[in-house]
Amino acid sequence: MKFAARVERIGASPTLTAMQDAQALKASGVDVIDLGPGQPDFDSPSPVKLAGIEAIESNFTRYTAGSGISELRSAVAEFYNRKWGTEYDLSNVIISAGAKHVLYNVGMTLFEESDEVLIPLPYWVTFPEMVKLTGASPVAIQTGAEERFMLQTRAVKDALNPRVKGIIVNTPNNPTGAVLPTETVEWLVSVGRKEGVFLLFDETYDYFTYGDAVHTSLARFVKPEDDFYAIVGSFSKTYAMTGWRVGYCVGPKKLIKKLGEFQSHQSGNTCSVSQKAALAALELEPACLEEMREEYDWRRRYVLDRMERIEGFECPRPDGAFYVFPRVSEAMDRLNCRTSAEFSKVLLHEAHVATVPGSAFGMEGHIRLSYATSRSALETGFDRIEALLRRGR
Ligand code: PLP
Image (cartoon, rainbow, N blue to C red; front, side):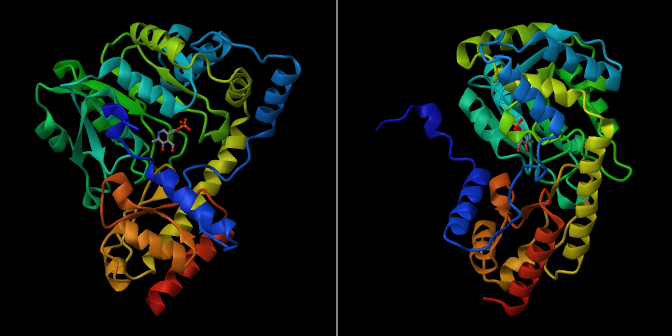
């Protein structure tokens, strides 16, 4: 079969592939500790589930407006207004089937052949593939463990040229957990304003920051109708709702209207039932979310502590999301692995611990571990990794 050139440019999501490999091993009866997944191990909160059931029982099961139900669009706008002092209304918000969906739609709406789109590296696996699908070229900007994977203004300045149409920034970050400092967010806004570079901010993990770190939304520094930005958010992680598929974009009305036109022909509305559930999520008691955040923080500290004691693992402290991205090149040498993919495979098949290789995120010599899993799984996982590194292959 001859595929269109646009899909020949992309491959399967390596994080999903890693998840499938782990699942296949589990299905064969092996007790696998899965530190791979990018999704909360918590159940969706009860009020969310009840709102979904109520939506089904009251037959709220038909098409909705393609850009989402007005109540949910307004509730997202109000959420931003309360949190960031903005003045959004429903026409600044579109509801889509997850952040992944709306990121792609924003890309399709703005980027095209001959454009370059800057992506800080390591990156969430989907960003470069999504850019390639639009016909534009992804251009990686390096960040490093020395700066705790913080995007450096110098690196952005060096990459700017007349072909650069946009930059995709993910804070708090998957896979590094880095949280972009407020000054850098403000500086990026000045770049957007002066240079006409479109700022696409993925704030999917906005709720998850720890210690003194604070998440700064792009919303804090842009005016609603500035024409150089879009903020993407998700219900997946904050509310433990990955399967419901609800995400959104907040931005200037002109962009949201165009996204609505695009989405109306592409997918139509996201699931009607899920939209009602998302509305209930926005009304949850803060304590319910705080409990999950505190648990992640405990696990983050535990994981950092365990990694500090493993020779061959080095990891700058992450302040957000629920991942760590240690440098493991010494540990790789010890197990005679040339690549992070080989190392992840060895961890899976010989220690029965699933991880995602750094190469999936564009950076060799690292692996990503998720702490969105139980305390006991983390403990067993690290015990097994330590034991394997002690005994060797
Ligand atoms: N953006 C980032 C940075 C992610 O890590 C993920 C999921 O892993 C997503 C977006 C996708 O979120 P959603 O489930 O809303 O599509």
